[in-house]
Image 1 (cartoon, one colour):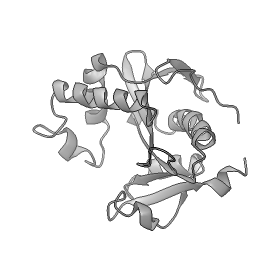
Image 2: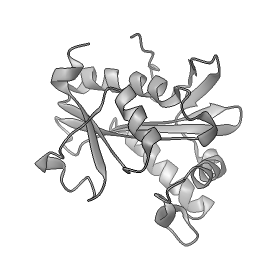
Image 3: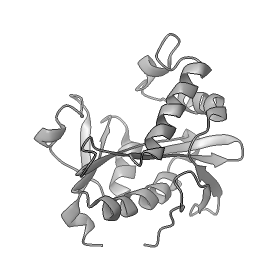
Length: 196
């Protein structure tokens, strides 16, 4: 499968969904705080982010959200993360992140995270963006695995992980602190990736 990556992690690019919809994909800017807040609050069907986003939570004000975006941009600049939002006009319809593990000299894994607007679910948004990040990330960093954790109630997230070729697995001992009890662990291992 061909993939396209921007030359700079802050470049903007587009993806065409199977239904013909064209989305603009780019990292968040500080001016995107309100759009990000609206997206996360309107698409949290299981209350997964409730303690984080609700009034009084760590990201309950636009000022706090701008601080989070600033931190994300610092991680992108440092080459530790690729975190992008997909836009349809002036509305965020999806978010995707690819975050390297803690070993700064030779990371062995990366965690992915994603969320999709309920109206765009099942339209291939994350699979299109995900393949743009996962494939080049495996090659660039010689990773042993890419993984994601998810709520077992979230069938759509599980289907997306499987579409990205991640498979349900036991949590490796080195990631035990990264995956909370009750969450599912999906991974794509190096030996499976090399089959492409």
